[in-house]
Amino acid sequence: MYLEKRGVPSSTVVSTAFLTHGHLAAKNLQLDDLPLLVVPHPLNDLTPDEVRELARAAYPVVIEQLTGQGKQAPHTKVDYVHPASKKVTA
Image 1 (spheres, rainbow, N blue to C red):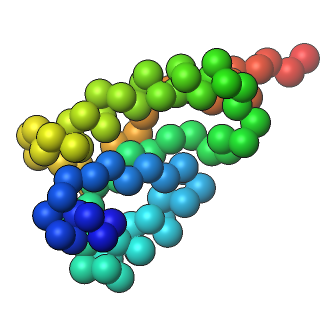
Image 2: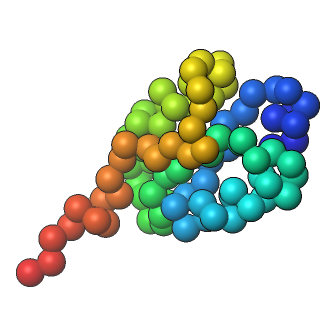
Image 3: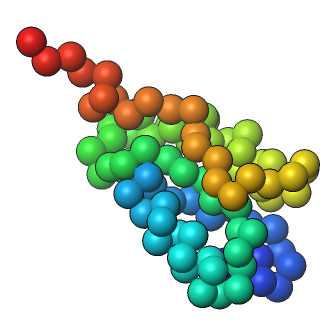
């Protein structure tokens, strides 16, 4: 967030559980328009392959945020479904 305040584009990543906190932290730093990249929560149980898959899904948004292409949304959710939510219980 400090880079953004200095005019250096950045990509701030938060998980869904911390989205509200991310917006509040940005507001407290007078960065109300800081775009957040939102990933599914939790992350700690992802395998290395799942982390790579998540990173591939997030990559276009990160590039968009770093290059300032187009109007930035307050937050953008990564198009990634957490593996735990895919599991079907019997």
